[in-house]
Length: 227
Image 1 (tube, rainbow, N blue to C red):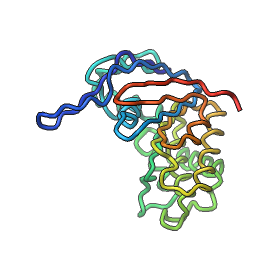
Image 2: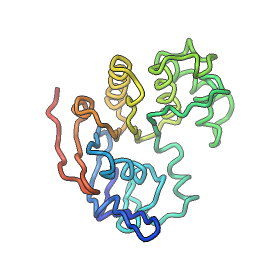
Image 3: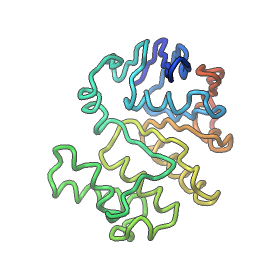
Image 4: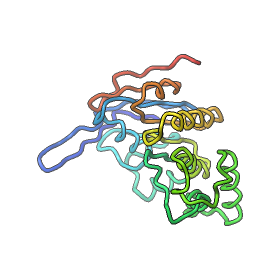
């Protein structure tokens, strides 16, 4: 599904150049569950952003479903990203002025999905994630775990092939964090590829594969033993 060849990313601030990714080589197959770990500043979020087509590399190749997208225009990347890649963030990124239903539906309003189909798909994903009874509530009326479920519903409603999660339990207590991790395992078991950045060794161990990064490099690429 994904293949990175010698992918690099450098950020410049004045005369200071920081190498965020240093010649990354990586393959991720469809259906994998990959955790990315490492200290702050090691390149985890940069790698996730490049995988999600939110940024472009300075050099190297990025093959997505057999197409080298490394030098594609923003318009082409946006078209590919829409419907193929879902995003979950630590901060939920829900819009307070919108209801739960409207927050999830927003993910479909930029495509060509008819209104009736949008409503049916939103209702179905809210039911699947156990939050349909909160459809009319505002985000501030929900617990942190419920807000993250809404964020996951928004990421999944378009049926993406790959789900990218950046510290999805970072703002949750342990009980709600464990609940989200169980949900991610279920989503992966149904066929969705997941790539997750996490600082938690316990949560990383729940993935089928772990990448440990340092200074823009992948130091360890380990397959986890089946539970």
